[in-house]
Amino acid sequence: MGGMLPTAALSAVQFGMDMAQQKTNQAEAKADAQTQTQQIQQQQEVQQRERREQLRRAMATQRARFGAQGLTAGGGGSTESTLSGLEGEAARDEQDATNLSSLRIDRINDDLEYQQRRSLLDASSSRYRSAFSLMQQSLRSVSLL
Image (cartoon, rainbow, N blue to C red; front, side, top):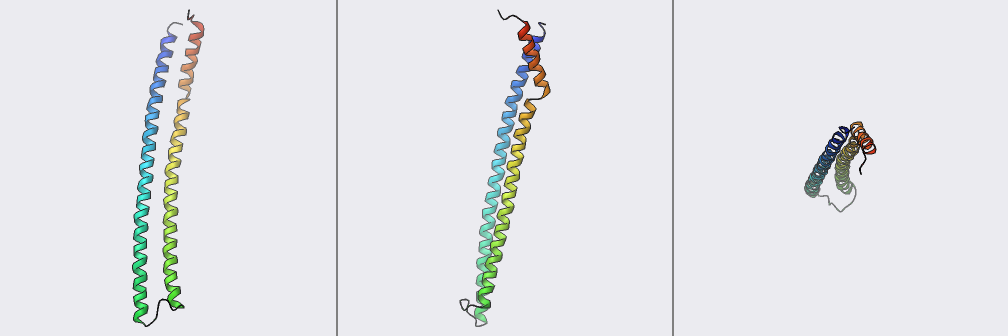
């Protein structure tokens, strides 16, 4: 019976070390997820600026073409529909990019949550339950006084 107490104590120490390692791993995973999220957001901002600049150039080019043909951009009709079509296409592209970025960020967060849940399940593994069971049995059988 006396040999069970040191084994249980070593198991408890191992459990404590494993829990400390899991906390470190979780902190690293969370920091990594935040870094990836920030990178996605920065890429999205850069791409958004580029799309707006492309739209501005495309609209200026189209206005110049209309002007060369003697049409005014504010005159209505096909000129306005062409320009609004360019704006609509740019808005759809921007919305698609935003949705894609959101999906990527959601995936990163889901992966992080999965890792955290898995760590909690690992902590309750049968190895630790049996070690604590042994320790409880040892403590019950050995008089502390």
